[in-house]
Amino acid sequence: MKRESFFIVVVDRDRKIFNVLGPMINDNWINQKVVNAQNSKRDVYCFSSHLKTKNEVVDNVLSSSPFIGFSYVEESII
Image (cartoon, rainbow, N blue to C red):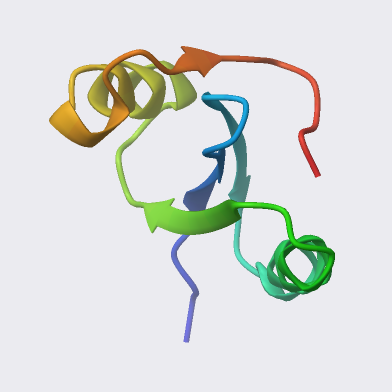
């Protein structure tokens, strides 16, 4: 069975920034980094996207009302 690839959006609510990682087929490593950051009292979380390209994911996040005022960054935020 072939696994479908996806993107992970990592959001830092304190700094109002987000990053997009992928495409990938396993997100265990980034989920663990997010949990570690949350345990250090950082207001971060992540979610997956099955859009086709990183640019589509970035555009989708930027146009979503919960992310008004957020900026996309290339560098890792975790």
